Image (tube, rainbow over all chains, first blue to last red; front, side):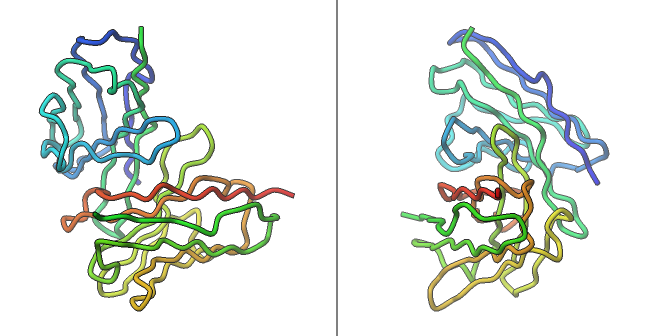
Length: 109
Length: 118
């Protein structure tokens, strides 16, 4: 089973700052990695799929990069609405299973 | 507008059964890859089950043999039949559409809470 490890667990930042979140896979997932944003009481929202493709309607300040085992989600300039928990997720080929990282909380400094 | 609306959650005793529903509008359930994902209180996300367009189904090890995913084309609804429920099944259950590339969940419902407790 592939394990996803996100770091750091919590980031304390101010609006306008650049954010870099990390997700490391225990073995290669090629580019089958997605990122989600979740706010309290809400369902997750897909931000990035296939490592670097932005989902429909996602602002350009969100970008994803990486392949193999190391991936990054970058927010170029934090907006007030970006304070949330972010999860990475991968799909294993066979049997098909989907696993999530434990999440990174981005909080107001 | 595409929308997924879950229902059927509630308080259930350990060992009991419950069926969750996910009514879809703006998309055809049987033409898509559909899934259930859950989130225990204060915890992260856990994939539970999925059903392919062709009807093949897959489950997380934690629920295999206890949960069954299905769909009703006439009602355009996805289901999750849960049995032999345990305290650790307590969670918000989301239905979600899987992208055609099978790599991500792009449409989510608002979730329904299941509490397993005596």
